[in-house]
Image (cartoon, rainbow, N blue to C red):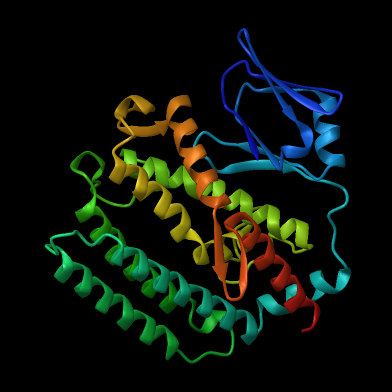
Length: 324
């Protein structure tokens, strides 16, 4: 399970291998072996014993920003990398193989977008023409990307960004047309978010960033050596590359919450038209996110939870780097 500490004044201590979470007059006890990661927001207090227990038991501790993006993390000293992975990773970022990996990732992202759009179809078929038209446009973009010629990523980076931007515009336009009225948005806004939908989506992407970064670190891969994103100093740019393959999972969680109409304006702090999830909103979103990521799915021939699929993805990538 993921332990989320996002209430002001919350306190995490450890006693005989049991995490004790205190806030106000409430006490919750959680067996340490059940915890896989700990998310810390501002004003949370954590004992040294809790931190050491987490390190010794390979429990990620992630410090979260208000927007849901990870600000930093503590991980086990057991995580490491054979030097061959790191050396080959540097070569991979500048090779044709690295460019091919990015192209395949973006194509898969657009295919995932197309598949999710089909799930929006209304029972009366009233928007089927809109959905089919959008998917035709996405398929044309996939074909254009597949026909690109290159020897390394710099040869096609600008075109890829343009095609990816077009796909996102088409994708979010059709999503917006299917959302209940209160969740519709003028445009995709990242940081800051100017509506409920974008605020939830940004927070979900932040959680997903932390999961992918953790999977890379466990596999011995340097998340700061990117391919498409490689000029952003001191940022986990490889995570920005890899997340494209999995964004649709975060999208689905947020869209599903909107379709159920369980998120309200009271779940957001709104300041100068900027929306930030508050404690109640985070609780619902994080629980929905974690439930979805614990579901067992099949990728290829492997049936695992989405959380485990991310770890398997990172492990396979590390194996690929070893044999270059």
